[in-house]
Amino acid sequence: MNEPQPVSPRRRLQELLAIPDNRRTEAQWDELNELEISLAPVNQAVDPDKQRQRSNGGGGGGGGGSPGGDGRSGRSPKSRKSSMRPQKRPPRAAES
Image (cartoon, rainbow, N blue to C red):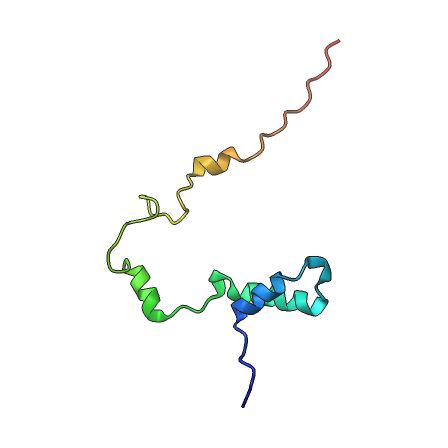
């Protein structure tokens, strides 16, 4: 009659995150990691109807995204290249 209601995964995640890191047990860490993985947006099950709406533009609204539409969130190849480290030059030969 007074069965406890199952706790939602999001609520359980918040409960586990409220415990200080140094006080969590191994079982709590394992549960926390599993919940974070299962609740990640990439791992969420998508309703086929909602997926179809997204791919069709969602029924109007703003464009969003980059004009090129390459799906790289506005990053150009130039910006990625600038983060690379320059190559080191070989040492100069000693002059006598």
